[in-house]
Length: 141
Image (cartoon, rainbow, N blue to C red; front, side, top):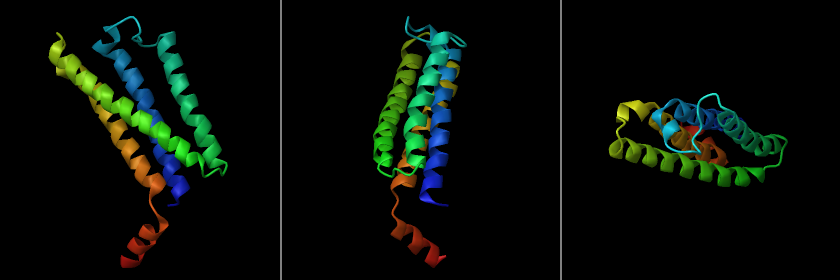
């Protein structure tokens, strides 16, 4: 599989999981934590999902059109996503430990957030693996 296809697949999965974190959080007790929290099926939730999709789609489209340097812009955005998902996972753990809500009420959001963080790490591998390593592995097998 080519590097461009790997990046495309991982970017799509990352965008899906980022949106899934937003939707899952709006379905959990986290939705009641403050005035800025999104309720499920609210305009705020859909605008957050739409904004994430636009922020994924624009650099992805430019990259797919052949601007290889956009991979570095996407890497910065992926790093921000990794930071967001890991800090969200930490917040969710703290929320469950220090509130009246059980961990079982937010475990799905925690799992999706950690899965999104893992996908972002895999995205870096897919985007920046060298061609020499790939060919040497193919010749050994």
